[in-house]
Length: 201
Image (cartoon, rainbow, N blue to C red; front, side, top):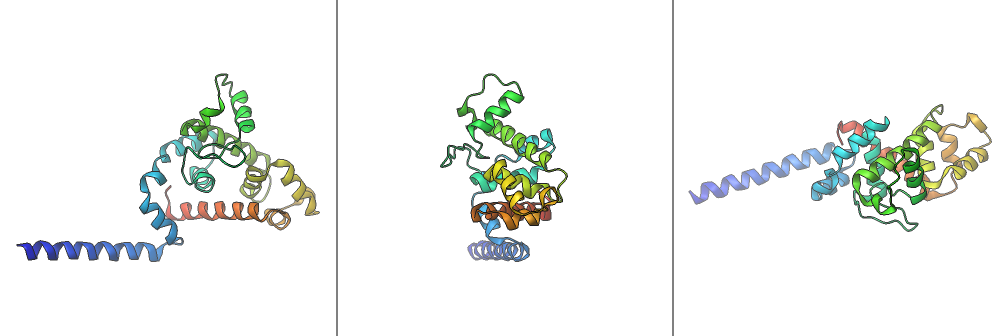
């Protein structure tokens, strides 16, 4: 009996290892999959709230989650070097704009540590940027550059491209002066494509 149980256990472990290897071999980002398995609760704890915020503002929840992944690695208590807070690393001035527009008079900066509040404010802010560049060939590239570096810098980089209003996402990329912003944009777009390809958050 003991031998049977031991053999069954070994077969189950081997089958699980083979299945995991198959999943990883078919993934475009096996490292992310391993990290997700290791911290599954953290990676998926806010999926429902992300979906709600995305639907509320008409932003693909997979895009919102890609921003959350890059900004905070799903840590609601994160504080950035410039005071950005929470899951989407929202700044206090941006949150104040959100609160004023949505007539939330009781808003306090510490509210940004609430996942629901942070996702609402961050997704709202992201939506403003997406709308601003809605006529561009790839609004997400422009919106992410603004989310990371601010509108004035995006305006400058568009001006530096010498393409004016005709500037495309590639023109913007070529003009971005900060390697960190270029990496930020590209990494979020890659993560967004990853979520889209697998069909779930």
